[in-house]
Image 1 (tube, rainbow, N blue to C red):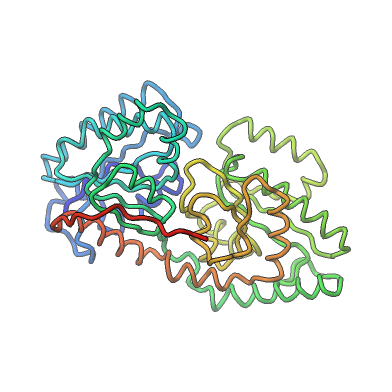
Image 2 (image 1 turned 90 degrees about the horizontal axis):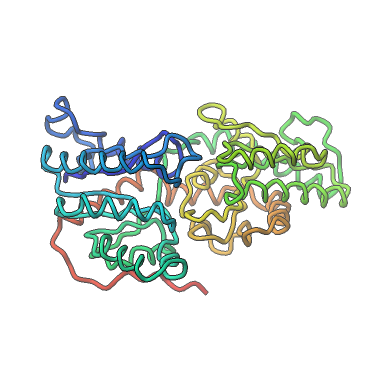
Length: 423
């Protein structure tokens, strides 16, 4: 099967671009160029990718912002896609629609208007969530009508979760498949090297809270510092400031209980806007907040691996507009970290039913309560099992390839997929 992938890969680095990179690598890479016109090396999936790296933003802060230069770039990418359609005889167009945001929607209109007529089949992969509700509640009927005209009746819509089935079904695709994200296992030695230390620290915390005993050696596994990891862009909507406030509130509670334990937020990520960086710097002028946060900046490779291995909890109280199935939560589960996150979009579906780390959005006090609860009731082993069962790269690529290949099978008329009712 030949697939024209109209999507960008890093940089800039974020969850969606990373998943595009993993897909391309997993399916054998970009086959454009004379040196790649030989028969496909077997990758076990039967997909040949021809990639148009449709990158419109150079930096994170530029994503979603309109610039006249972006329009020219987009036109160039569309012409490149059309050229690839005929140069390599690629009948299938793969595209990732944007979230509920006008600039992203206008981009989708233009790509579909220019490119879709030239391809036999179109595949929409819904990485962001919430477009259907946004169309119903935040825009006029003319906007909904144009969106319907250009994006309706896709040959295949791929969604990450039951939550965003609504985004696909809104536009009446011919087929819908649910395919979880998946990543290479970042912690294959979890059972041998990470879990024993995690259990030791867990037992020490429980004993310290039960008896109020001191922890004499802060560098030992039974350290009095509970390391709460945050890995994401440092923005308000991603929950960065709520995470800081939650750790401050949790430390106040521990002090009131005369506990020897204290939490520290280990923040790894970049600031997207200068105003939020200034706000963070002003926040650190307060002694209480400054003592509760360690800012690492952007981390990768060995530094990122060390941050996950040394953490005790993972905190991600997001309410970001397009949040769906974030890679950082999958990474946390792979490292067996107990997770505190929000009841937002698809996030609860990623975790076991009734998981105690799911809290309301914009509620730092609830985040603090969940952190205090999880630090002595969950070693994270259950979440590691969830990762192995649902979110490995091998499972993701196999399910994705199966979904993609289905568009070249005889069409079977069916009703839109309906998400199961919860509660």
